Length: 139
Length: 111
Image (cartoon, rainbow over the protein chains, first blue to last red):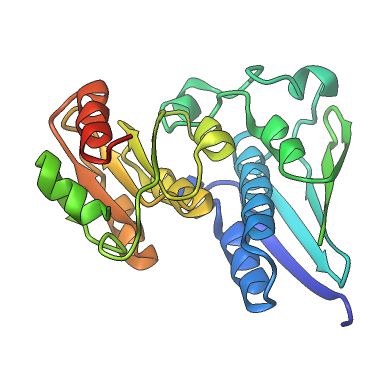
């Protein structure tokens, strides 16, 4: 099949809408007959990414490309960037504010969960400019 | 055993039935931090938490748990209930603390 391209804008001001992109991708993958365990991994990785965009970056956009062999995701924002990516990748490390923690996020598991649920993950970030996260899950 | 059957046995109230008569419970998972739940809860778990908002429902759907059980008398806010109805997520509730609720469920489920 030809590659399927999906594009989503993530509204950085509305916590209640975070998850819309991952839910839409989940639905699309289900319609394509992708294995449920792969759908779960992709949906979790994208949801964590969306939550990060809302918490840290006031939104951004997500591009998803699906072909016969893989699902490729690019999450791009113009937020404040990540100072120390190695530290951000450590489970339990978080810079999320208290109000986010009171909603059940900010456990410092977001980026580690994204890595755990994808086959490849690469982060490009510049402080004050923004962050791009590239993830691939093989089919 | 289905979530609705479990609710009857442990005297949990049903906030939203959703797929509560169609799903089976295979295990129990207790945690309130949503990212931890997404990383570690298994599909078909009964998820016990005190976090009752919209994001709880989103995480339940992503993690594919059988149902949410709100412990300690916690209620779910209106937007959360609306989302649970839309997504057919079963939501139960109890006045019991997390540990006691999990104990009852474990006993009834023979875990």
